[in-house]
Picture 1 (cartoon, one colour):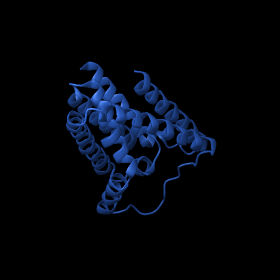
Picture 2 (cartoon, rainbow, N blue to C red):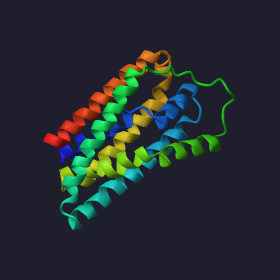
Picture 3 (tube, rainbow, N blue to C red):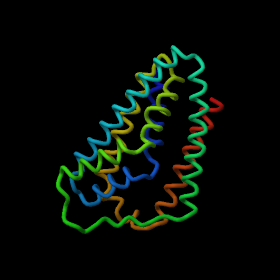
Picture 4 (cartoon, one colour):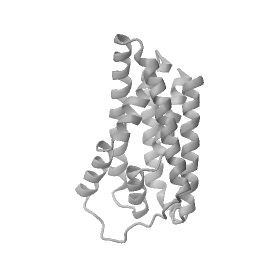
Length: 200
């Protein structure tokens, strides 16, 4: 059970760490110190719902379709390899410095709406949480629930640190090179998880 908890937390952190529209939005809100708590809450709660759906739904399907677990495991490996390669390609192309807008603060409803769209309209969110997290959780039967809860806490801790810690990162992410190194780190992490799934 302890292994399921640790892996659930680490896998969630690794998957969310990838730079995307959602993370960039949370980071910008944190840098601007604008509606940070609602944005963090929307992202973390959305992830928790999707992770729960992946863990519960995948378990039910695995019992009725015995070969599904193995198929999803290799699908997860393929997805992680491609995803890691995309991160390396993004690093090779160079990064863009993050310069938050100096515009007037947006209303809360608009900010929350943007966070919801960036979360629920992003197909990668479903691949990461429902499909990939669901398939990985099956490797830790009968402790899938512990894996899912730990993954949800991983998501919560990441978005909290990103949103409220963003002010400390402002000088760092003003340089494009910081994004390049982060992309490289994310790519290495994705490939390491793929290797663990394939050979673990």
